Structure formats: C-alpha cells, structure tokens
Image (tube, rainbow, N blue to C red):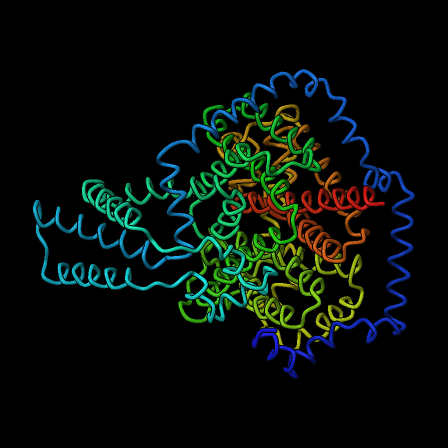
Length: 635
C-alpha cells in the first residue's frame, strides 16, 4: 500500500467524508422510504405504458441491422475494404519513416532524457548555425540558445527511465487514482528497457539537425502545425484511445477546427485498427446514422446551399466522434482515462472562470444580461468558451457524471479527489449566471437522485431550503426571474419562438438548411416587433427549422434509443456501470431540458461534447452486453 493511500485511510476528514455516503444513515428514515415508494410506483407505471414499452424494448434495432438490405448488399464491398485496410497497414508499417518513429516511441519511455537531450541539442545547434550564417543574433538571444544547448547536452547524460522521473510525483499519483491503475509507468514492460545504442544516438542527432534546418526555413506556425500533425497521427495510429483522450482534454481549450482534425485522424486510425476493436455495431448507431443522412438532405435542399455545405463537415465530425467513443470506451480503464481528461480540462476552465470573476473582473456584454433588472450583475464568466451560456452548458454535462463517480467509487481517497475537483466547477457554473443551465443541472441532479441515489434528494432539499441564506442577492434575483416576463430576455425569447414556429410551418419538409446563415436570411421576413435573433433560442425549434421534421424526429429517436439502453445498464449487475450510465443520462436530460429555453447547440464544442456523451452511453451499453455474453459462455 502506498504512503498516499495510508495517509488517506488514517485521515479523520476522509473518514467523516466517507461516512456521509453510507446508506445505513438514510435507508431507515421515513422520508427515504416515502421517496423510494414514489419512485418505484412511477417506474412501474412508466414500464406499463406505451412510451415505456418504446423505451425499454430495443430488439428492433439489432434485427434491423442484421436484416437490412444495405448491409446484405454491402458485404462484398466490405471484403474489398478489409483487403484495402490490410494493404494500407502493411505499407505504413514497412516504411522507414514508421520504423524510425516506432523506435523513438518505444525508447522514449525508458531513456527519455537521452532521446530528448540528443535530439534537442542537434535541433537548436542546426537552427542556430543557419541563423548565424544567414541572419544575425542579439547577444541575449545567442546566450539563451547556447545555454539551452549546454543544458540539453547535460540532460542527455542522465540515464533515468520515465518511471524514475515521475515515481515521486503527487500529481501522477492522483491521476493514477482517478484512472484506476497503480502507476502509469509500471504499465510498461520492464524487460524492454535498454541502453541507447550508438546507432540510435546518431539517429536522434541526425533528425535533430534535419528538423532544425527545416525549422529555420519554414514559418514557425507552419512548422509547428506540420510536425504536430505528423506526430499526432503516428501516436493516434498506434493508440486511437489517445486521440479520444486528446479530444476530451482539448475540447474547451483549442479552436474547433483543430478538435475536428483530431477527431478525423482518430476515426481513420480506428478504421485501420478495426481488428483491435471488434464487438459488433455500436448501440444506437442506426438513429445516429439517420441523423447524418438528414443533415445531408438539409444541406442539399438548403436556401443557402454553399453555407450549409460548409457546415456539413461538422455533422460528419459529430457522427465520427459518436462512433469513436462508442467503440473505444468499452473497457473500464479506457473509460476512466477519457473521463479523467474531461476532469482535468473542466478543472482548468473552471479555475480560469473563477479568476475572471474575482481577479480580472471582466465586464459583461450588454447582450448577456438585462441591465435594468440586474444592475448589480457586472460579470458573467465565460472562461475559454464563447459566452457564459456555452460555459454553463459544458460544465452542466460534466458535473452530474462527476457526482455519479463519487457515488460509484468505494475508495474514500478517490471520493475526496473527485469532490475537490467538483467544488471549483460548481462555483464557476454558478458564476455564469445562466438560468437555463441552472434549471437543467437542478433537473439532472434530481433525476439522478430519483433513479439511483435517493439519499441525495435529502441533501438537495436541504441545500434548496438554506441556499437563499448564503447565496448572493444577485443569484437569488436571477433564480426568481426564471419565467418572469418582466425580464427582457424572456419576452425576447417568446417572440423569437413564435416567429420560428411560423417559419417551420412554411419549411417543415426539408428545413431551411444547416447553419445560422439560412436562419438569418429568412428570419427578417418573420420578425416580430423588430426583435433581432441569430437563432431560435430553442434547440428543438432550431433543429426543426434547419433539418425539417425528419431531423427533429430522428434526434428524438436517438434520445429514446439511447435512454432505453441506459435503463438496462442502470438495472444491470455492474455497480460502476450502473452509476455512470445514470449520471450520463441525468446530464443529457438536463442538457435537453435547457434546450427548451436556449439553442444549446450554438457552439460546435457543446455539440461535440453532446455526441461524445451519447457515445459513452452507447459504450457502456455495449460493454454490458459483452459481459453478459461472456458470463453465459462460462455457464
């Protein structure tokens, strides 16, 4: 047992924290039994209804795939595709370029200082020499470069493995606790450790000289992008799950086009590595595929076809991300790795949002608040995202799953780590002052409590009762203004909804086309009282207008299909999967409720997050089915 775990077990604070979540303190209460009875009866009524049968019966999807005309006709083509993939893999793996990169990739685990030291020394030497010959240096710049060369040369003399570098790091230990492995570096086979040979040293020096020269002649940004793509493509080809982890980590931090590029590379890598990820079609793949088809139809019949065709790659990326997530995350360890990336990313974003509110004190845009009703509301945080509502939507999808993780894990130290990460996220979420997101999260937490953790209802009710006593007045005023027509933003939305419904009546079949441009083009003809709008401020109205009635029906089909699988996982034998599936279902439900009051898919980053969450739910459902089959095979 590590020192970290021993300290955690001896901690009085963690012991008290763990006791809060023990069921015996709740199950004997009258209130708990009353809530449990209400939820049980409601669930029984739901299962007996037509809607309940539609949710819980999923046999049709498996049968439709197996018996589809498209699959039968595509089988001969599938064999050709498999041969083509095998040919591409053989070509890649037999190339000198691949062999060089593979050697570096394997060696850097065991001798990182030597690999980095030799390469960076040669890289800086080459670029410095060329600049000295054809340009000039300031004394300060030359001193810095010479110092770096000496530092990397000395660094190359260190003979430590990756394990030796990080074995004492508290950050690594905390990350390992979240992912659920003893030590990241211990996962590597020790028998492959070896000294860096003279040939390898020459290789690293040669590569450093070559890339240093290229760096000198190319613009800096071009060099970073070019070799960033090459490096990422290689790593993701070897391990597609790393691509998904990068997407989860970078989603709120980088531009959407770069995220989509990583999604595309990961998708191609997954197809090339299909042998590693067998397990049948992903759950809910049929409605997801039909959603993509309706997007193609909407783009083809768009009132502004060129603009809609520019938006179409986004919808392709959404489908690819759903497929990647649903296929890769069928193992618990991989799932934990990806969600740990989410936690780290959301924590960074939340801390930056808190900084904006308390230290930077960024001013709130006029469009984000009714100044007359809330004159004291000076700042609504948005962190690295476009506006406060987008930030709230992002955190609103993560927070319920984090709460589910707290209940799912049995180790007090893990509960404490996740809870500590959750606190700044909740604070940042409140500081967005997004009323629709607040309502969505409240609904998500109540739903999670009703479905899985009825003891949480007691905590939520207590918090709801006492929160007016400690919440700032501006937050209480924002909560009280929900639904009030005195708030200009509420009346603003209602007039836009009416105008959008009128637009849908005229364009109900194929919609006006993908993106915001077609909406802006025809909205001016339906505008009420001169109310400007970029979108419908309602997810379902916007989808119905953009993609027609077919698009709206398909997204509802997708939700019903995914929820039916989630209910089965919730009632399955795997405790961990049950809690996580309930958390994801609650998060998506809160998001979809928020969609009644705003167009929550305004930012492509949130849509990517939405499809990734659906992919997680699909993966959990698939994993549950595979586990059942294995148990059955073993008698």
